Image (cartoon, rainbow over all chains, first blue to last red; front, top):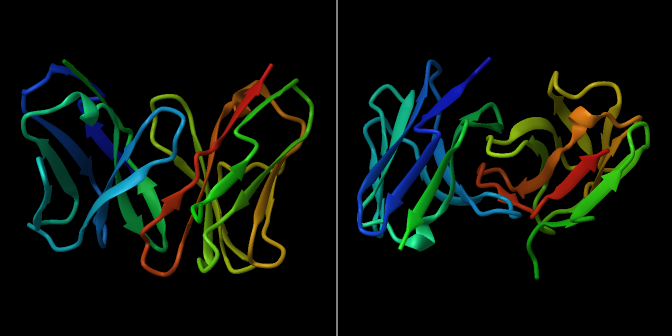
Length: 109
Length: 112
């Protein structure tokens, strides 16, 4: 069974702080995706990383794929209340996504 | 709106009743997925279709669960003899071949 563990499970910070969310697995994935989900809605894709060691930036969000393609991180700089939500990593495995356990982020003004 | 549509958004039922959910994917998407999500957790894969063919079912999908996609367009997920443990958000997603999934807003099921 492929498992993706995310840490921390919950993060509550003040506006302007930086944070990092980790996604770890014992399995290798062909690619890894990050989603953000708001209450009562489905997840929305933020980014896909494909190559080991790859770094992608999306405004204040920086995503990194581990060299061995088993882990990934999401770093948010100067968090804003609009960043609040459930962040999910997902490994692409044989035509389906395996989702991580999720990190709930709360950014207070 | 050309996104993934799910109906109903909310369903409250009594234990033992049958329920059916519908998903209308983005029209040109040939793959359709069903996931189940409990509060604060990541979605768990249930099953997926390529056109009308159901290609994979999770071990989580007991024989009380059945999914169809009869004409390769919309899909239905039926749960028979619902149990309290079935309470969850049921998410549908569609895609072409590039694994970029587009999710619907989900159906929130509460079994009393």
